[in-house]
Length: 312
Image (cartoon, rainbow, N blue to C red):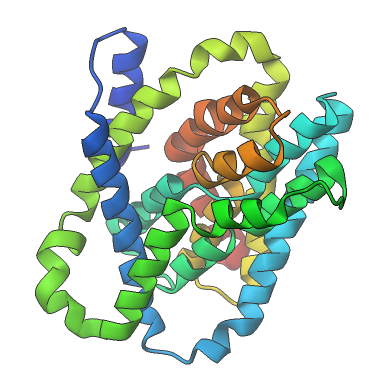
């Protein structure tokens, strides 16, 4: 298997960190790369959204929301009953896995473009939709529905999180401007997409490697869960893609959304809603295990699964 060059940047960053080389992208540059990726993904989806009636997507958006509720409900009993995590920690980890990773989604987009596979370009809309339901489900699993839950603060932290806002900005501008946006913004946003993603993954490799030391503390179960559960979730995503009638490329992206785990939006919301949860567990699983697995192994694996199930 020949790895995509952008994935090689992730492996390079991971290796650099393990070798204890004193290298890290300045925080301002990492922030800039994150902003560029989020807006570009939003713009691409918005342009395609402008070509169709939004009402035609209502049914599919409902199915995606259902998937976002179902995945943490599958993860929670595995973590609580088999992994024997405390209820609040099992719920927190489940919420992370019910949400999504923009970085993994971007790798999937790059993979499809490299292999010249088309996909439904309104998929970023589903990326936005899936950021929310898992947080709500995770809180209910941890606490039930109580008066003590500060839903207003949690909603503000979730809906106004940087990743959500930037994706919405891109979606709206892309929808409002349509195809004519390429004439002015293509050199800055669309043309350098893979280069920006490569540098982003270089930094993410360094960050992911920093979580490796925690694996000794949290045990083999967390490692196994971080590798096996994404495949289970991807299979769930594949079934939803089949029901929605998505193309092969669209199915892959929905599988990636299902299989990925949040390391940005959900940690911020959970910090407010479930302060007693151990953030180290969730971040070690999502960023230290699942993100590297998905980037290196998961994306091509899910593509093969989709090919076999959908008949190429």
